[in-house]
Length: 59
Image (cartoon, rainbow, N blue to C red):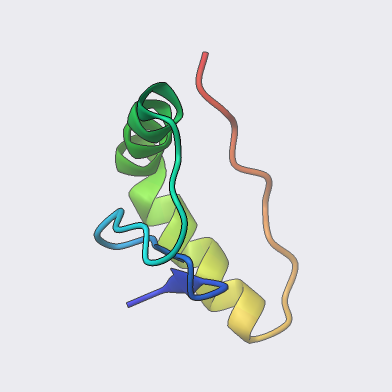
């Protein structure tokens, strides 16, 4: 499962270390669910040191 810096799991949305305020957590989870496929693709590209496309934020 892709994990960003061992603090956040892209696949599950689990925060492995640290905390976010409830509103920030909800927005992060909404964004993750909308862009999950793009996040995993970006992670795979980063592991190969390839260029990653920008993923838009929430509107």
